[in-house]
Image (cartoon, rainbow, N blue to C red; front, side, top):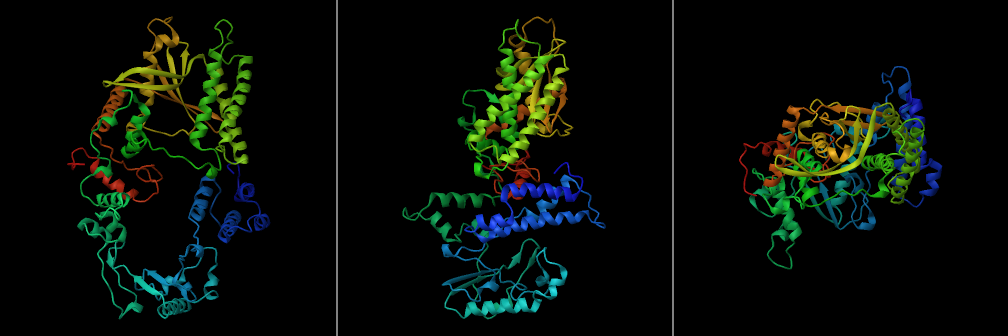
Amino acid sequence: VRRASSWEAAVKAVNSILQDHIGVSTWRERAWAEGPAWQRNAADHVERIVAGLAELDHDGVAMPFSATTLRQIVGTLLDAPVRRRGDAAGAVTIADIAGAVCIDARHVFVVGLNEGVLPAATVDDLLLGRDLPEPATTVVEGPRSMASRAERAWNAILGSDAVVMATFARTDLRRGGQVYPSPLLAGMPVIHHESHAAGLLAAHALTTAERLARSHDPHLHSPRLARRAVALRARLDPRPTEFDGIVGSHPGLQPRDGAWAITAVERQAVCGLGYFGQFVLRVNEETDAAAILSIEPAERGVLVHAVFEKVVTEWLEIEADQRPSWLRDDHLGAMRQRALELLDELAESIGIQHRLGHAAAWRAERAHILRSIDATLEAESVESSQPVAGEHAFSGVVVVGSQFVGKIDRIDLMSDGGLRVTDFKTSAPTSIRNPLDEGRRLQLPLYAIAADHDRIALAGDKHVDPPAATVRYLHVRDGKAVARDVVIDAALVAEFEGYVRRWLDEITAGHFAPRPHLPNGRCLMCCVDSLGVEELAERARLFGDPDVERGDA
């Protein structure tokens, strides 16, 4: 798809991918015959959307092709949940009110009977599906016909034996105005209820679940519902609570062995609640293998790291007098072949767990990874460097009075006697003005300190007064190896120590406030389902200020 030069070529490539995953329409009619109808309809809809993209090549459409534009268009048109009609087998049916003319039910709940909704306003009835042309507005159904159908449905509901409960909103918080009930509710008895938020703040139970949560009767009390009610109320509290990450100091917040990991400290910098969940509560996210279509970025990174570690470790295990020169002459070709073998060996264990994704996707990804590894080995073959450690484990490194442990992806001995630390990345290189990224990237300064700390064990004492260790990111991706050096000077080390001290102080004090995330960011603890992200971000901005008075947790 990336190599396509036109929308037509991209559509052909995408259609080929679709056929690998969902087959053609005639095959789906047979293979999915017993499945739900919405599934076949969704597949057909995806195919129609993709096929329609080829029209963007036509004259008069100012839309040049690019993979980014394709991703944005497809995301806009397709990244929405498929609406499933109510399942009759579950005894509950959810339908538009117009579909209630022939419904047979004992209880009917009609939600949102505000003015302009029933009967529908003319301007609201001119909305048609995006796949219907404008002339269809005069053929499909007129606005008055739609309103009349909804009105007949309402009368049918009232004329039945069902118990009917209808609701309408009194205010529209999004628009800041007052709204009114539908005229069809005129003359009917109305019971006014306080809002859910007002009820939480006033401690009045508004729902059956809340009454159960606050009941003292052991037969009715539900600790889970009680905790949920407390959590909901805490979100409206003007002071920070434990649900905002202000849990207070506790011995369990210290690392078990007394030594810190720099990746954990970086997690605190990204999101305090994320650190609390991952490193205190030990909550980890597990992806359902059945939902993996292509290998996940984390798995790809583990594979690439493991290949480079094995290649270096096997070379270092050869006796020094028999060891071939690193990536010189025939050794380069041998290492390329060995890297291919190692990749397939390591991928086999992941494949058993069904984490490589679809076979076609893995074949393409495997080719990309091999080209990237080849590019990395080729780049190293022209350097005057020699590996001294792969996945080097260090300990006893002290920063601002605290001990740190960890592993360094790769350490090389350079021609000037200095050590070079390499941190392999399988993500695309990004431009960051601050190499520490506001305290979110702290590994390289620590790794430089650790390499110099273990210098004699790594390279011996042959060199007199060697230079300080250097560090770099090496992005192994898209058939390339892109190195990005980071200069470690006194100013950067001082800034690094300042960030470490700040994050460790927060962890020790039990201050795990969520931090504002990027628009496309996602955190397992504070926005796992994308609900309440903005509210959390606003609270994080307020409570993240150290000068703000914090309440007792």
